[in-house]
Image (tube, rainbow, N blue to C red; front, side, top):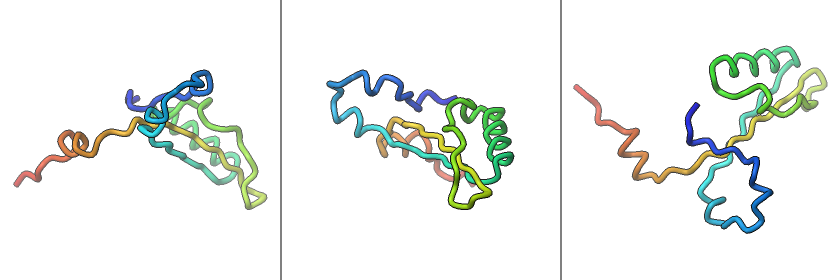
Length: 95
């Protein structure tokens, strides 16, 4: 998995952390909503694909529809500068 995702395990342990460090991260929420079996199977599929560990997802919670549940994955991604993203990700089209 890419190293650009930063775990948040020690965030509360650093009371003097600088606001600039927090502002340099994007918080990404991935939400699955569906039947309990469908959500569990999708979490396992995403694990097999290397997207996220099973334990990284929240426990199943009731959704608005009583027959559905939801689970959320929270990732904090280090924000890259737009200039660096353009130089590394964008390539001119080849003809």
